[in-house]
Amino acid sequence: MILVTGATGNNGSEIVKLLAAQNIPVRAMVRDRQQASAIAAPNVAVVEADFDRPETLLAALNGVERAFLVTNSSERAQAQQMAFVELAKQSGVAHIVKLSQYAANTNSPVRFLRYHAAVEAAIRASGMAYTFLRPNLFMQSLLNFRRAIATKNAFYAAIGDAKVSAVDVRDIAEVAVATLTASGHEGKTYDLTGPQALSHTEMAQYISHATGRQITFVDITPETMLDTLLSVLPAWQAEGLIEDYAHYRRGEASAIAPSVQDVTGKAPRSFETFARDYAQMFSS
Ligand SMILES: NC(=O)c1ccc[n+]([C@@H]2O[C@H](COP(=O)([O-])OP(=O)(O)OC[C@H]3O[C@@H](n4cnc5c(N)ncnc54)[C@H](OP(=O)(O)O)[C@@H]3O)[C@@H](O)[C@H]2O)c1
Image (cartoon, rainbow, N blue to C red):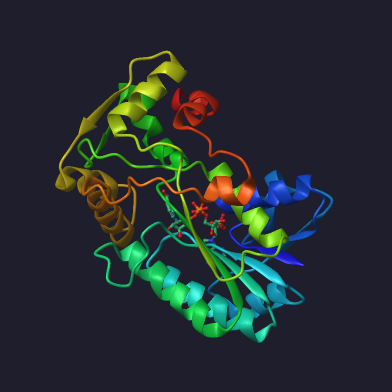
């Protein structure tokens, strides 16, 4: 049995849908069954479990051979993922596919990259087989700017003209499904990027073309960006995003990796394709 955690989230929901479409039995872990209607399918068994309640995780892990691990990036993420790894090991899980992040490193100034590296180390030490997926910025993260784009025809971030090789979540999900359903990915770490590195100004041009409106990117200071983020996110996450954007601004996330093509046999989706497919969401 394959367990997909975070099954209501960006990556988890795409993975469950892809497995369902291939008629592969999957157990989809959610906190609240009522939120799982979008992933309902005959071969999808929904299980309610909470990373903060070990007894529910043990039930979710019962009989699982391969597990996809993701949490949102909160202050609790490292502890939640470490607990999951420990219980997965106890439950006899053979292979964990962990959603990590591009440039994960225990010495990084970016807190997200440090916690991902710490969890990767714990998985390596557990003796279970593993595959680490290290995606760059999600193209779908640009949807976080959609309110500003819809209302002001502009979006704002502290990145300057640095280029980022953002990746489409649909490609991450395809890589995840390949690693969960076929052998040969054990012990591998895959950097996942899109096919091009683009500045936010270039991304704005693609969004303009897709929406038929003139969308402008405006560079702002990290302080201004932090003020905005603090109005919608807990401080730990807002400060982490500022660290992430400083990392992008330093040009550390512009390399292009071949893993999506290598693992899935298909070229990664371009930002142009993403912008076209999500044009409606940038307008509402
Ligand atoms: N955003 C980016 O550009 C980017 C780039 C590279 C890597 N990443 C990494 O990607 C990960 C986030 O992936 P994502 O966007 O797919 O996640 P997401 O959409 O935020 O989904 C998180 C999932 O975790 C579930 N969850 C939260 N707390 C839980 C708990 N206590 N118990 C059980 N489930 C819980 C949520 O369920 P509910 O529906 O119940 O809340 C949701 O299904 C992070 O680790 C981040 O570092 C992000």
